[in-house]
Image (cartoon, rainbow, N blue to C red; front, side, top):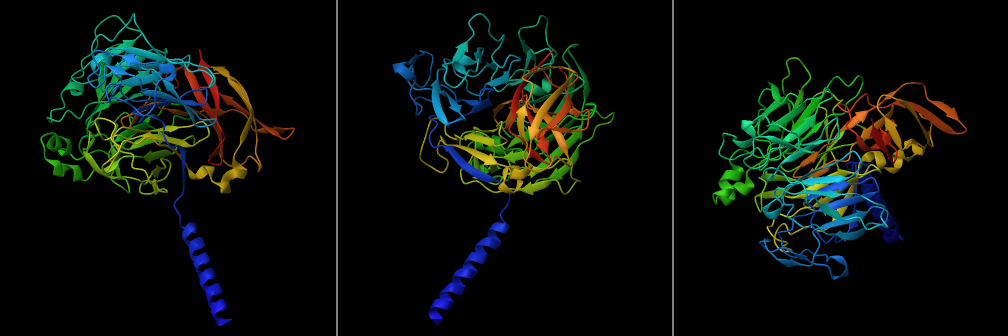
Length: 542
């Protein structure tokens, strides 16, 4: 009997130890969605049909998924495989996590992208035979057979490799930078030359930390363009640099030493725009490795963040440190206005085999908290997401995590093999403890125009009280630690919430113009006390 009592007491102690430990677990949960997507996604974009476009490059030889119906791609200029029957892009159906192969014809290595106002995914540039190409993918319902189309009657005027796309207020696309390119270009093309940005082509540090520049459309219509540690305010209508911002301390911040960047949520009268840039590599890490100094793979990454209100008359960088150093991290705007920092490494630089010490722990950045209290460490994952990994916000509030290939070809051995698994990270607002606060959208408009009032009807298990928001989140093109076109706009709620037949009616006003929110499809979230609904897709038009 004594032995039995002892065993029972031991079991209780063990149980309480587990409970106590779990009570201290950091927020957030992970789930594996797809064991083998067939490709390692270098570029990722979420469509309005609850599907996700995953895209790699073509010059890698065979992927792990075949094109359908015995189709093959014949390209005599492909450096790896001139006759290729494997797919290098796939479509993930979020309803059942199924994968459908897509056909991409020319090399999309380190290309750029953005959604057009009609919901078409626009894609530009790349490497080798793809460097001047334009491609489009018009999303469709999951049971249809939409695929990539390569435009034949129009190309880039010069090859764009490692460039950035940004949609403009009129729905056109500006293409900024690329290897050795110091000018911009437009789709559709515009007449006349473009202003020269010397810092986009020559960094002055022999390392060219100026690729994939950070480009943000400000609510006044100008562009914030950042590369290496320099940034300008660019008036694309007048084709001139309006002003230069102070240099960001802490070393280079763009590829191959990239951190990441976001523009914080636009709200109120939309007159203020704040940019945050976090992480990066130590200067010299990439340069030393490219010269054969393998020890630089262990050079500690940068842990600082710079924050600047670019609409201030005298803008200045406010510096703070993340709880973890990080290179190649992705910054994802959450529906609440907080920022998730995820993926990447803690040492080295970007490039094939140039980084080590994967950073498995996500960090939540809470911009409304006072300085010194803005960062929170979250529940770590278990899969390294290194070079060529992505992170995208999903309509249900989860974050889709895909990709990671530090190898030139698909390689499934070594410290960091090619990663074909796709995961989702759920922030704490999706925990069971918050389920009674989560709104359910019953009725919402499918198309809205600028500056008008609309109704959205929701139900919720608890009462709607405290902070209530209706927010528009864009669907960006995520690649190389930066989400091109990412923005979150908090809409103004114009009347008190009324309750009718168990439903709450919320009256909101859409953004005033395309400078605040360019035309296109947005995920519309209703947020109750920090807990977002599943988003409805809404098309914003003029």
